[in-house]
Amino acid sequence: MLANFEKPSSAAVVREAAERIASAGRAVAAETQTALMAGLRCQTFEDAAALAGQSDLLLVFGGDGTMLSVVREINGAATPILGVNMGRLGFLTALPAKDLAAGLENLWRADFVIETRPLIEAFGRCGTRTISMSAFNDVVITRGAVSRLIELDVSVDGQELTCYRGDGLIICTPTGSTAYSLSAGGPIISPDSDVMAITPICPHALSNRTVIVSLDSVVEVRLSSKGLETIIAADGQTQASLAAGDTMTIRRCRRTARLLHPGGTSFFDTVRQKLRWRGSSV
Image (cartoon, rainbow, N blue to C red; front, side):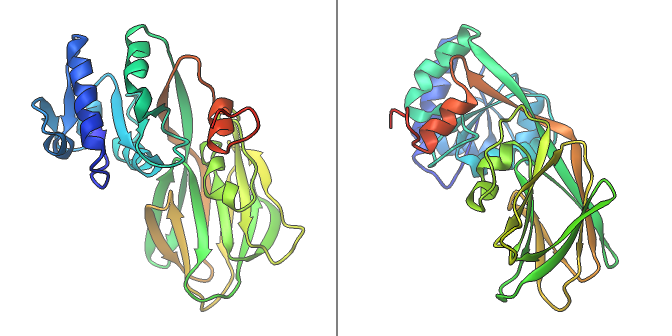
């Protein structure tokens, strides 16, 4: 088990989960800081990667940011992740905290689905530095604090797409389609679709819209603007600065993430509930 330390309210939910897991005759293990926060007496591991290496399931208590951190830290481990939502929207967390008991009962009955979700990676040389980062949601290239347009030349599989002029560009996985890309006007993509979305942020040309490409495509983005601070970030958690002439390559990553969902739920149920579409019970 692993929890977001910035959400003290999760301590009680973590304790409840530990008690229910132990009562079901299963072994409880936790990341060290999570165990301290919740007052657990169980086997502990120093970080998410070590915990994943010795666990059959990772229970993650937090929001989407916590899930993104865990996916990055376990670095492609095959251990499935079940997110317990302690945040707001929680597209990646499959189980609301209030449904913890029922969700665990579903697990004991083997009533669950495991989805394998793709990651993407971005790499390139920035001057004398080599940049390499992976993302579960998205790779974003944006301007810095100065409110001026940046120019990004984009090609797909060696074929020129266009030069985007605007605040930046989002290249996202299907998982990331409900994150920043959605806020920028991008489409919602079913997670079983083998595609990436290229979504401009506040483009100067009104005709610029999201372009959907194969997940097996190779996208190259070259910064042509000079003298403007430009940042590349993966899942908003790791970032680096780009300079004019720098080129970043974005493609499918060899690593994947495995998300567990209780039986009887679906991606479309989640979208309908979280976005309060017609048919939602919210």
